[in-house]
Image 1: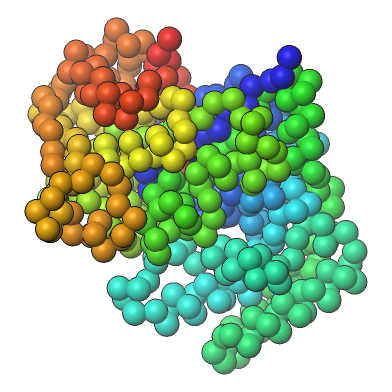
Image 2: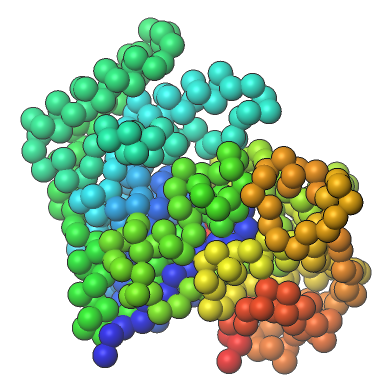
Length: 429
Ligand code: GDP
């Protein structure tokens, strides 16, 4: 019998707490694989009382014996990848033979980082995407422009060096003149990359084949997305998006399996909404409440420390995410963050400037900038939920809030997270 293949996908603007959910689900699978994104994503997970931020390695790495893969849809920053492998190992986690990187994955190279920075700096304030400056966007641009370098290229030193030099040449052509210090730093980083590339060989694999074979032999696989649906290159709030397909469809192409192999898609939603970087956030709070929620939820980016903007749960976006991802279930996170609120609102539709009301997430980002959400307000529960381990432990108003999310998204809730720790979770049977 074929094994189970579950996609875990963010359904808002990322930072939904996917890392925690993947960490919980990883217990029950044999392989955890990431299918897109680069070191711009940061999953925060806790092991005992130790906080670990993983930028590239799937959080499954913290579970002994699990195989962890980075698919072809990922862009890999070699230096950071090895740093992360070494840091995890320093915590006593044995990673030998447990990590594989697709031979088809593209590399994020030092000149991509420089391009990222100069492009963002030269954009006007309103045009800035708010990138993490890690070179992810330029790496995907090089990939689409057919001038990228892949893991498979590291197999041959000479060829790798040639590709690296010609990539640097091309990149320089679209950069302003660098200060002497910067130019030297770039050259040094390129040298380091050339040296490190050799170490990649032991990790190179065919992720599509590994996953297909595992499933065929009855083993189960979890495909982990980074960022969220509203940041998807095609389906998100373009141009304020990331450079890859974060949605569930991207899991098949980003690992190298057919979509028919996927057996379920779990959408992760935070019990309210946050957004880091620029772009529209229809349910954004007024400044005072924004500040209050940011504190309650510790809403600061795991990768950059940037404050996240906060807002009410947006059911228009969640419903859209359910459709675009073909969700089979939801995981609602950070319910505990709402514990102290007297009232909680949910956006169910948007009023737009021409006087009409829309229920679908619009493609036009400027429309989204100007919408007025229609809210439904529910009573809060004003009680501590962090100790809940079953549905019956949750206050009645908390259950009513979750029921309403289920109804509005037409998707069953499978998991409810009530704290940062692994055991602070409710499994809905
Ligand atoms: P990800 O990229 O989707 O994994 O999200 P992040 O790791 O950037 O952000 C999630 C943050 O919320 C992390 O600091 C988690 O430890 C934390 N978190 C996850 N689930 C919960 C929860 O149920 N309650 C609380 N209070 N924090 C949570």
